Length: 191
Image 1 (cartoon, one colour):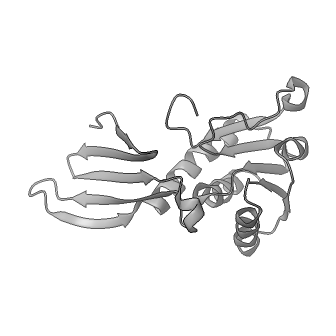
Image 2 (cartoon, one colour; image 1 turned 30 degrees about the vertical axis):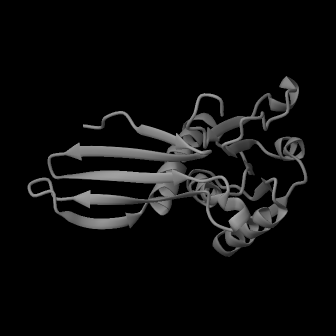
């Protein structure tokens, strides 16, 4: 049983509360989204997952929600890529180099043999940090692009990992044709 996610916003920051129950256990995922953390050098998304005993309610485990969310969201995106992208695709682009980006690329590479990964982010340092992390994990050419349009032109699969309320893809249908797009990061209708 999974009731609807609670969403509370205060002063531009968001709290997401997600409980889930089954006979063997129940868990609550508590995640915060604090955009100002970018200026503090911290992750925008932070949180915990509390796993409880179904009989007593006693806590059994406390886990890092950032890692679990990254793996789960990356796996869901990878399923989409597996079934929607052409089996021969070789280039992946990721728009947004925040905490989700690493897991998005990692999981996408589990279902396709990408030999080129392109990255864009509003913060060049964050893009470089992601590129360095990915280079340590995989054998692919990793390129930081200067614009989203340039990234789209160089990529057959594009993942948008952003909470942006402004469009991040070029509005040119010809440049988008024949590509596979995965959009994550939007938890509000206007994102």
